[in-house]
Length: 304
Image: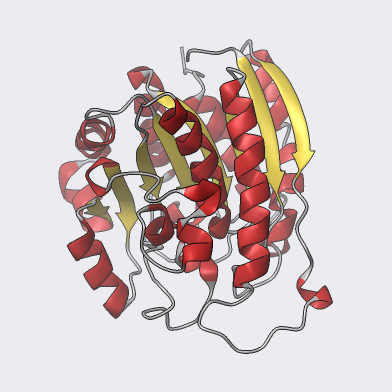
């Protein structure tokens, strides 16, 4: 890591999801001793608190192809400013979700910092879902299924142009890992986008080491650092039951840790977000505890 100062930023968003509860994710991860774990690794931790997010009960929402889009975009813009500020001060942002729609803001913030320096950002997106729907392809209208598309410049301008420019990451430098639940029309977006995508079959056949080696090579090609967007539903529900949209057949405990350890070894990681922890559906905060373990592995914790 280039910095020993970590900025923890909470984004308690559940406007983008179809199931309530992930807004409590930042609190659950903090309660799992994230800050003390990072401090034990030698980092100076600055917890910046949470961005402001409106509650669904306070909004009159009609059926829409992108539900709560204005409110989500506004919160993502606030998050982008906080993340950009932390990055520009030489700190390592760790963003806690919240549903995955927050990625449109966190990546915008990191990418804007690099853009100002005439540099480029790479992206590794670990998720059971592609999150590459647009309002035209989404069967649900839930915006947490759209942030990667928006990051790559597809979808409503409210999301694509957060921080004033688009795309935030070039498709050739974006990698999807762990896919196992992709909507039919969304699949076309993935295939036509130019991103490198590894399904769970690829993980099974190639092994996590080979997948991560290829992923890092693509995300770091002509870029100056990598942002990790990690959805806890990428992990099998046997290990991470408390997530917004669980899907059987995910990463094992060791596969998830190995991915983090290899990313750490690359010394290319510049920012992390962990999303979709849902304490309502969890057991004894297991999923948040695993999230903290995975962050620790990404930040340099080793077995020996």
